[in-house]
Image (spheres, rainbow, N blue to C red):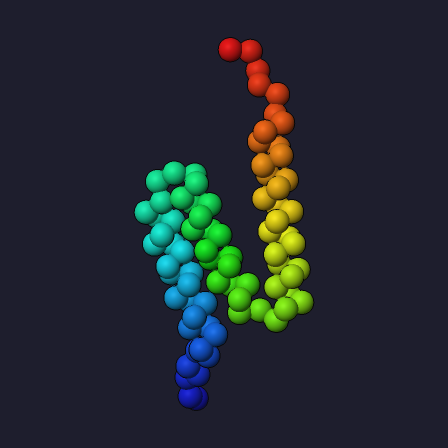
Length: 79
């Protein structure tokens, strides 16, 4: 049985994931981590057909806005 080599897209995805892990490990602030995640998502979106890219972008935007809204509207307890 012949072993199939990964396609170019699979190889790019593997490299992109490895780079994400490396860069995430080096990130020292929440803003840096967010920047790393943004770069990863941006690269992944560029590989998708337009319709799928639009759906993923909408999902990511909704998740980011929702998380930011939750963080900024939480009631702080007594100090």
